[in-house]
Image 1 (cartoon, one colour):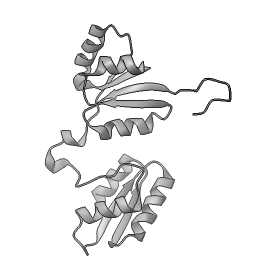
Image 2 (image 1 turned 180 degrees about the vertical axis):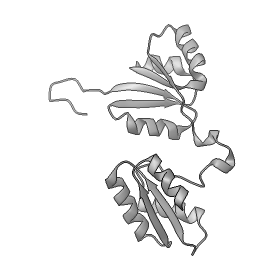
Image 3 (image 1 turned 45 degrees about the horizontal axis):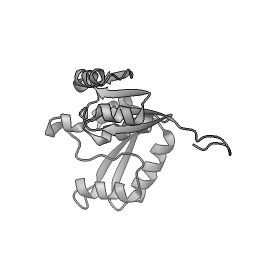
Length: 169
């Protein structure tokens, strides 16, 4: 964000996100586009972060909301605290976790490396792309078709459609 000449620099509002998994913080940052997002793996340094950054709000996993509220109260900060359930793959049993996953932006190299990591060489692979952005789906499909592994590509624009496709295949 740039200011006009002679004006003070413009700043986006900032939010703090407290979660032990950095991927969750990156996910929220991608979707909170109007905010600068600063992540913290726990509540221990929350008062210091609030003091240093003066956030518009603090977003915490519901599991740590009580300790976050207590830490902010002890330090005397009056900042909105938003508690929500933010599950991560690390919270899932091993047999329910995906073999691998990618976070946008995805490059051809990242996609190929991930596929080679999960699929034995030469086996045909079926890939289901799930994204509500048609341009992202098209780009991933092109990247998949250009790759070195043989693959069948299925597409869904939402979770419900993806589940229906998975039930059929």
